[in-house]
Length: 307
Ligand SMILES: [Zn+2]
Image 1: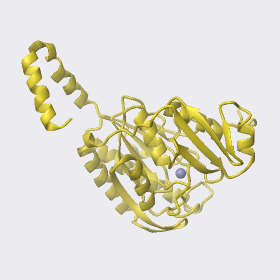
Image 2: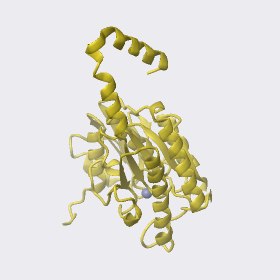
Image 3: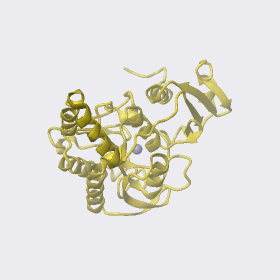
Image 4: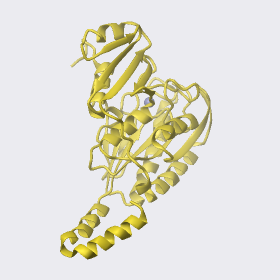
């Protein structure tokens, strides 16, 4: 709504009197609640360049989960200062158990481990007002970007929504968009930011590092990355109304290409999957919630899953 339209709406309220009397009160209530969802990955965290930082067997992982936590906390603190009344943080990297949860303020709720519905966006629904991505990385079809991949570097070579290649960032923005939630800010390397902005528009962003290759970057130090994230979240929350939810046209066509040959052969036994070439399948979903569930199934199902 533009300010002129707002003035127009105000005049209509005056003219129609009691019929619209409840509207300002409802608006007041809406302004009091401010719920923020923060999805946190690790490849885009300042300083991360190789697997040595990214998982429990890496020699630097212990320190880097601390840095990842500090970046998430910088976003939490800035969101709180901007008036957030409820904050959900989704630990969305690797085993989903990276964030040092004891460091978060008591009112924050943290989502941990997998599998879970809505994946990296678990916890989002239509009561959320703004989504933030921390530590995000570029997609698998990008020739730039530290550790660029989409969902699984080991298994997938392409994921596309309605014919357009997606990154985890743009896929997750589409899930948020399903619930009417705009992504307002992200952090990661320059390649990751450029890709998500191409999909969702000019959101606020904290560039934690410049990609010099798949395993190299010119990076900010951890304290500088956290400080920049705080600044950009503050700016984003200040102009929250200027961001639009990403809406994907339904029914949604999802194309998935695998590194190996067998997944597409076996999945094509199911009538919901069409095999489009030796390494690829296509499916249709009624919305992003369904698309996300099917993608999770493709990624997580194995007959020997326990317990
Ligand atoms: Zn990750």
